[in-house]
Length: 345
Image (cartoon, rainbow, N blue to C red):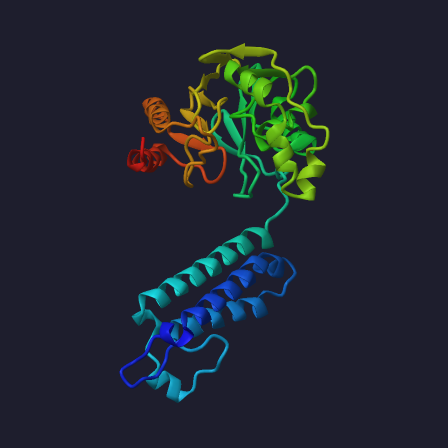
C-alpha cells in the first residue's frame, strides 16, 4: 500500500511517501506548538533547526530526517512535483509559521503596564501616554482645559490606573477631573477604581447596558491569559457612572470642548469616541487602528462599521489616536473602509 502511494520518477526512484510526509508534518506541528515555550526559555535554536530541517527535507523530496546524498538529489523528484506531497509541505509550513508567530508573541511580550513619565503632547490641549505597541496596553488620552481635565482610558487594573492618575495629576493640578473610556474591555476601563471619588465618570448608556448584561465575564477571560493579568485585575470592578448620555455629550473643560459620541456596536456594544474640537483630535477607540479590525462579537455588522467610519471622517480629524498602536491622520480611515467593503455583509 505504501509503495503504491509513493511518487516515482522516470528511472523508478521513489520520492517520499504520503505517510512519510504526513508523519513529518505531524512532527513539525508538535515542534511548532512547543516553539513558544522554547523561545521563552532561551533555547529556540535547536527547535527552530529541527523545524526547518523537516520542512526542507520535504521540499527537496528526501525522506524526512535522512541526509540527502548526491544519489537522492539526482534521482528523487522534487516533492513540489506531486500535488499530494505539495499539500503536506504547505501544512507543515503553516504549522511552522503558526509556531513562529506564537513564539514571537509570547517570547518577549512585556507586561501590560502603562509607562510612567512617558506622556507626550500631541496638540495644544491633548496629551497621550502611548502604548508603545505593547499588547493589552491602551493609548491613554489626557485632554486639558482651563477648568477641567478629561482622561480617556485607564489601563488594566488599579496598578495601571494609579499610573495614569499620577500622569494626569501633573497636568490637572486642582482642576476638575473627568474620566471616560473608549469601551469596557479590561485594559481600557478597569483601572478606574484607582481614581479619587471626586473624579466624574462619564459613560454612554450603551456601556452601562453592556456592563449590566455581561458583568465581569470578559475580565475572567483576561485573567486566565496570564498570572500577571490575574494579579493586576484582582478585585477589579466597573466604576459607576456619574454622568450618562445616549448618543452624544459635549463636555466643556474651559476653553476646550470635547464631544463624546456613542457609536453603536462596532468592536463592542459600548464603543465611544472623543473629538477634541479646537484641535481636531479624534480618540477613535478600536473603530480605527493601523492593524486589522478587531471584530469581537456576533452583533458586529459591516454596515454599522462603515457608517461609523463615514461619521468619523466627516469630523475631518487632523490626528487620530487609536486604542492601540501608532497614531495617524484621516488617511487611516480609507484602509478600514476598503477592508469592510470587501467583507460579506
